[in-house]
Amino acid sequence: MRSTSAAAAAIAALLAVLGGCTSTDPTVAGPSSAATDTPTAAASPTTATPATPTTPARPTTTAPRTPDAAARVVLVRTGGIAGTRETLTVEPDGRWTRVDRAGGTRSGRLGPADLARLRKLTADPRLATETAATADPGDCADAFAYRLTVDTRTTGYVDCDAGPTRPPATSALVDLLTRVTA
Image (tube, rainbow, N blue to C red; front, side):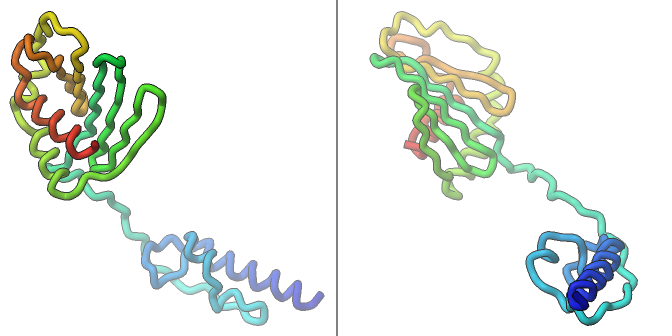
């Protein structure tokens, strides 16, 4: 019974010490998940340590998005003889997920060179002009249609030999994405 009340007193003292800590300094104990994962000397059931002054909390900051960061890219491919529908989503950090018509998924991560190429292609100024253009796909049966969305800009084309030429920036992005996520 005595050890239970001593343990309760030690826990109360520990909570009093930790309750005032707001430091992000790893050398100062504070209310974090790390403090609950490892035992500390202050948690000893026989001794209690007096509260010590803490250093002022440092402001937390998040790293700003770098100017060369890729945008989120979504490519939807539809059509073909079998009525394909695939959606490929590439996150800014290079993680990608492909979902087919039946709901099956595949995922991966772009390598550094492919991610750098993706970032360069998504920053291509021609892409902005291609989003405003619409083209008649012509008379094409069983062709694949590609709809590409980069952030909020959407462009696309129908891959048809008899149709208009493919938009170059959009086509380069589609070619890269289909090659590296195959």
